[in-house]
Length: 320
Ligand SMILES: [Zn+2]
Image 1 (tube, protein in one colour):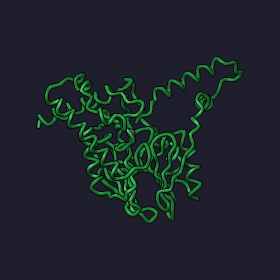
Image 2 (tube, helix red, strand yellow):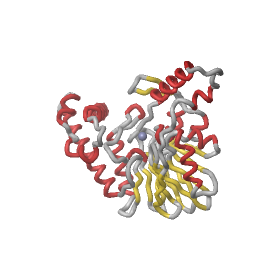
Image 3 (spheres, rainbow, N blue to C red):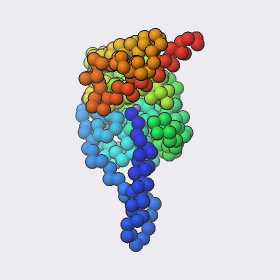
Image 4 (cartoon, protein in one colour):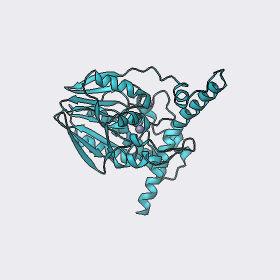
C-alpha cells in the first residue's frame, strides 16, 4: 500500500496558504508552517505479545514486529512519519534502550515512513538493496503522474543485501530473505527462527494483494513467494501480515490457493485473446470477493491490473 505524498503536499500547501491570509502580525517560520496544518490522526499503538520478548504493534500503516531483550530493541517496519513518536513510546514501555535496528519489509511509505526519525535517532536501517535504490532516487507515481522525490538521507537503509542476511539478536536468528518481484521488487520476509514467527510484509494482507507493477511487483512472483514461505513454516508458525490480524500457515495457504485460482483464470482468458474489459466482465475473483474484497474493492481496477500483469507474463513467455 502506498502513501499519497502528493495529497499530503497539497494539504500542507493549502494549510500554509490559509495561515498566510490569517491576520498574523508575524509571518510564521517554516517549521511552524509545516507543523501547523494537519493534526496527526489520533491513532494509538496497540501492543500484542507473540512470544517472550516479541510483540506485534499495530497503529496506522503496516504491522510492526518488535523484539526486545539483552541486545536491545529492533523493529520490523515503522509505519508513517507521524507515528514514530508513538512507536517510540510503545517500545519504551518494554525496553530501557531505544530502537537499535529498523528492518524494512519493502519500500512503501506506510512501512518506511518512520525511517527518517529512527534513522536520525541513530537506529541502523536494514533492507533489501532495491529499497535503498528506490527510496534514494526520484520515482514516479503512475496513479497521479507526479514525481516522488528521493527520501532524506537518514531514511535510507545503511545495511543492504541482495538475497539473504541474518541478524543475530536477542538470542534469536532473524533471517531475511528476498522474494523477487512479488508485491514489489523490494520485498523480504523475516523469520524469527527460534520463536517460529514470520513477518510477510505486504506479500500477505487481509485482502486481495496490491501488485505494485511500477515498483516491479508481479502476481506470479507473489505466488512463488508464498510457496517459498509455505515450504519453510509449520502449523505452529505465527504469520504476521503486512496489514490485518495475526495469521497462520493455513490462512497463508488459503490466500496462496485463492491467488492461483484467480491467476490461472485470468491467464487462460488472456491466452484466448480476451480484452481487458472482457476479463473484468468475466469476474474471475467472484467467489473470493466476500472474504478478500473489503468495502473498497474495485473489481475493474484489481482485475485490470492482474490482466496487464498476466498479459506481460504471457508475452515474456512467448519471447523465450
Ligand atoms: Zn506495500
